[in-house]
Image (cartoon, rainbow, N blue to C red):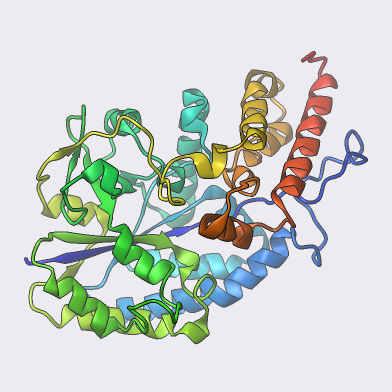
Length: 402
């Protein structure tokens, strides 16, 4: 076999905190229930993304799976988006199930709440991973074999944990500072592990689709399926092209008018024209290729921003204050055994809340602002901390003194 594409798409929507004010504290606990016409309305955003991205993308993917028996892909889908689909858009959830029912779409494991819990509480992290595993088994009938952490955050400790937890593979960013002279287009083994394999995102090719596709000033524009397949075929030094991106790339981040759906429609045909070319799920990739080297990642990397570290979520004082405050409540919250209180606390661990507080400038800042439902990072912080103070009030009702 010459070369494979491992296409991996990530589906996620958080429970956004409404503009929860100081006057709501101790009076209302509905942090996530904004009116439909509000920018922070989770239902309104879900309706929009489902219409623009999920439904048209799933229709096309299902048709591709029917037309090309060799086509396959992998996806991850957070517990928070599954719950919202169950509540507001069961027909959209069914369209995802139609894909996995083909037997050629693999679901990847992660935390239920799309949190950064691994870096703050290993116990809480493992609970959320187990919650996600059980939800995927319940909804899709799959038991994930490959792991990805929130925002592709990764280091040696995570790989060691995933290896001991029995996962056959783990996903990470193919960042140059980590790989050095090596290429992301090969299978690797994480440092200090015994069995697990490491698939590293080809960020240049992935971002050509996810970020640059509709940019008329980009030298590669317009990007057609035959041109893209040609780039991959011309590269002699490759086993597998790990194309990792958000599901919302199709129709939401890159609008239909950009031609993104035409690109998706034609990519399998153009790639499979060349004898020996294949599409593989991440598990199939792990089974097909032996690791060519090990990769040592002592410091955490992610797939976000120019730095590819955790600074997108933890880079300023507001973000650090908010996330530390949240995890300091852990024992008190869990000891209440109040499921509603615990679930609200877990929803507030979702990484998006801290992402919205980012104060970076230039292109990274523009991307943060694009995803945020708030007018500015300070409004995001204020709404979050007001909800945090209400969590503390609810704890006091249990006699907890903080």
